[in-house]
Image (cartoon, rainbow, N blue to C red; front, side, top):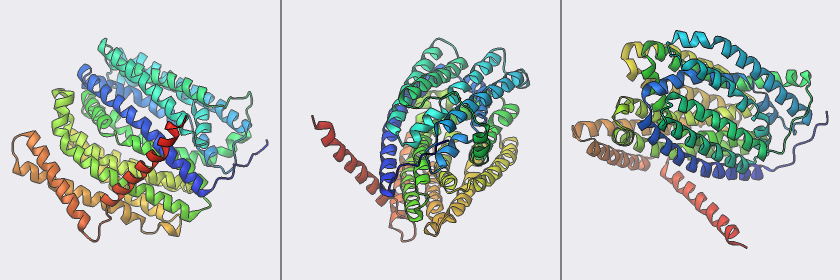
Length: 504
């Protein structure tokens, strides 16, 4: 094999490319968020909690299969300092297809037991088969997408993902309006997978060769498993919702939880963007500890400032917005949406720190943390739903997530001396802003006993006042100044782009 060295790229150029990638994917995300809002508004009127519950339980097997079908081999190629050879990429491509075929066969064999054990009904079994076969849409795009991400070619990726989002929304809404129920969600996801696969292959110059070397798989497997096991364990952890909640509280409860998470996790798209851009960028900054630390601190600071201001205001508006926009059938999910929204702050920050762990060659530390989180959620979550029912699910993510954030930040701070003090920088804003949100919520509900609109407005006013008061204190890290910096960067980027757009 002929190894080719990665092109020389300076730290400043890596940061610039990463920033461009974030802005491009952020623009795509804004459009996708608009589509997501339209989809949620329509589907919430057309579907019911049991539709979301059935889809949530059935889709879990397919989601788990997607994690099992990679084994982190593509991440291992992104992580290496030299460019992957054609033999390496082709070997991984065919290896992915073989592993996916094995997983599809296993899930199809076990599907009847899953459907029978949860009494999902006659339509569930063909739905499992269809979604499981859809795993090939994921496995076939891994290497072409990896080749684009390694080159930080995020404009092409953004275009492909926007097109697949359009296809999914149009398909899902149309089928739901025709009365397909849970099938509209399943078929919408399959259409998205097929369209996205075609777009990625069209955008990527990479094409497979008829070559396979077992030695390449063996060499990358040790590194790849280290990268893939943490997300696999995290996927197993999420399984307590369809498996335990579905068994204890029923299919409708799973539907309410899944719907609430889908609504509350909107900011997670920011996390997905940052993680996708950050991983190849962090990997290229391995030999520059100071640059690595500065880039990570800046990303965490700006992300924390944005989320800690916007999400609490959204939480206070949820009791008004849910029945008004989505209908009375979703009112039982209001507390879950509020809890999950706050949890998303933690999840987003943890995601960025976990990416730094992996890029810093500490994936086994990430695995240990993920296993601890999984055990905690299964044990504590099972007790909470038996003790408090559906409402017990809400606080679980905050309790476990705050511990995970603290431990992960401490482990990342040990990567190099320039990251000392990271734990306080990351944890303090969430804790102080969370206490302000709690105080504003309690005060608003005490002062206004009736009238959800007035209560929400009063809560927002109280929170805003307390937030500005926090900014004047000497010891918390200021957040408003960081927001001004973000706005200035966006304006500068737009000004630089304007002359290029107006030039002939």
